[in-house]
Image (cartoon, rainbow, N blue to C red):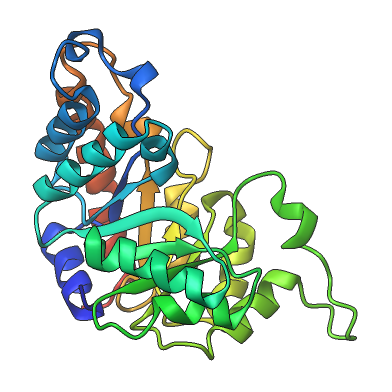
Length: 275
């Protein structure tokens, strides 16, 4: 999916919501456990209930890998029922030497047909480049995350006299590897105080923003600090949507929560983007 197509979807749906599909078999509604593939059935109903209100889905690959071959099968079937006009994110956090990254890129872009994949930048340019170069496919690079451990490295001050944080150098350097039509950045919603600085360094890139909802991030804060004239945000919510109910009404409740977020996003888009 191209940048223009993604922005068109945002405008049409008046939403920049990404729904996380971190589907844990231990948390599924009891009535689904007797179905042939409970994980897929859960995902299918969530997608059918929310597809008109969101612009992206983000399966966390670990939840599927942990189930072995059955998990990969559930993931493949899930991708088949996601509408073609919705952006798909493989939350895989890959990042290895070049030839390994080439195979990861083939797996997620060619075999599974994801639009994008999250990548860790620690090993540098040659670990990221193999994911770039195909039109419509994106790298979403980890930049500033919401977890407590982000302080260990991302918030270290560089000893070069300019007092920049390490995450700022990651942004500056990686922005030379690809255009804003090929690369996005992960910036956690709980890092709203730093989003203005992120925008100074990468003003035109899309940001994937996890951490809204159950993790405590503020949609209002992240939108006011991070939105640009093409929106430039994909805000993810997972637990606050897919686990709203553990009963037979789980899809209905997920839709209600998704609609509430979409309506808040619609108001923010109208306020912050000049038509």
